[in-house]
Image (cartoon, rainbow, N blue to C red; front, top):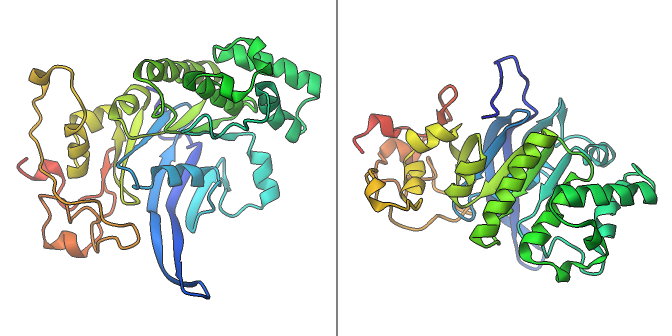
Length: 333
């Protein structure tokens, strides 16, 4: 796994107390009556060459976190420090320069591609916009990138609707690679694809990471894809980090009840191999516009006690961190 070689190695990206709130407005004068707390006090580090997976249910804040890391969403509070610069505070002009090193692959490859432009023009556009190449140089680069992602250079004269879903996602990956980025946010890049195509795209991402020395933030619902590609996993629930550890630790020694619930839902081909005890969870996910007081998971947690209803747990631990007053190691599961 691509983990920090030593404690002295500096993170490529540091996320500190990141928050993203969306105002709720009502009335004729659009008065703010509350906030949707999509991301609420999220912190973690990402080291060069590794893949950090963000997992959780729909609405847990994974995608908003990913978009905030490249400032497609402006954070409400907190810091996103990339190579010593706080992306939340720099000017748009400075951010434009850093765009070459921060890229994103979107979930829906079709809606993220302009249907009126040929693929060659779509891929060349970032180079020309940042004045990094002439038209002829950009065209040559397009040919090279298409070959790298497994597509023929002859495809550059086609339009997005002429490709399959898997091919479109390869084009999305190619576009993210055009500027030689250091960090790529993969926002559920395989969720819209068939299972067999998912495997091909995941293998492509791993090969590209090794060849081009890339760092990924991989966002997904499915634990299978996250387990395959991630070095460390960040488990999120209702805008908060519940647990953060290596992939092996998350799957073999989960500490948060919510992580255990996600693992119970992870399909195992041979049912006789399942030796995990089931944790019964009841109720629906609360609204991020009105999150529960205390631990946000206490309304569905079978181990919740009075302190869980009053006090927000902080992330504790070294290497394997968990935000829980009563982690699984301290209860009889």
